[in-house]
Image (tube, rainbow, N blue to C red; front, side, top):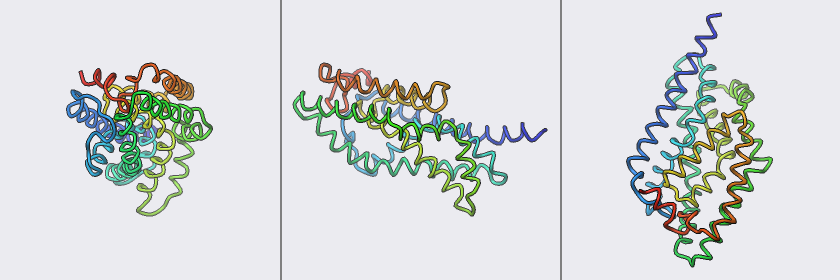
Length: 255
């Protein structure tokens, strides 16, 4: 019977390491961007710098919700656990880093909305909120979220992986499901401003609740309905989308 507590400790340590990494990323975000006004578009960054910032943002926002899955995966590893979990985590983050390429192109395009007339900028913001909100209510979102919420099936799949690439494949596979689950919330983040710290905190809380809370599916639907409501309200209050209209909530985030 001693295997149970030992296995638990095996899973707990990597999970704690992921939480420490996420905390470090949050500290970086708060100290680097916490006192600044949310900026539209790519925040004036070139592609390499944007990808670095984007990846650190994803580490801060996604790793806390991923820690339980990492803990389960760690229990399937019997040797060289810490370095192998580092590979798993790096592969997971590489998926999000790759997603930074279309995110950069999208942010560059959306950033131009801040220079449009108010009505046009609000229309772009409304479309962003609507797309993000509608996806939250789709069966595809439910399927991806179900894999993140009940990862036992994933563990069985990962157990069938063989060879030195196992941890890399497992991390990338889980990262792909998380991307499918959460890309819509990152799209909404673009409307608020990619480095709007308050928006990051709220959306990270939504992501964590979606995946870990007993009522996670209801949280996902509530977030979708809230985003659709914002798609309507932004016509009357453009400041709800500072990342596309400039000012407003971004000013408050920088205070």
